[in-house]
Image (tube, rainbow, N blue to C red; front, side):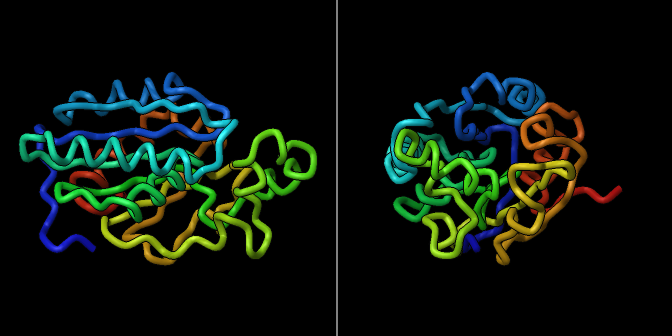
Length: 208
């Protein structure tokens, strides 16, 4: 956990990271809703298909360091969808911002994806992240150490056929909630945006 209490405020920045085979546009509805609650929303994009996850994690860590050193004191919160959450985990292992706030993971394959396992024999050479995200014992993602640093909230999609509910869990998260939707469509629900906002502001999801 962070060494001091996290108090979210309007001057904070939320950095969003999309998943595999996606683009920042998939996070636009979520970003639009969060914009009214926080000072800045950064919707970070990257070429997700062709490089190993570590490459993206290093680039994201560099971005966090630049923001940390150039910022005005507001907190930096993270929101990662699917593989975006894994990239953020790797980045935080490489660089832990002094101004780090909270971290929300949406439909993350923390313990791998059965969908990736089925695709890996056919597409794993072409797209290395697919092979890294399988739910097989000893896969890259299943071998990552538990993250340390921020308070983590995990949102799982109830009808996610790509990542099972149990595989979204880390075991060290501050809160975990299941919301209606598919792996990607959960991003576009108003309820998801409200839960992301609530966790960033309070360190827990709303059960009302």
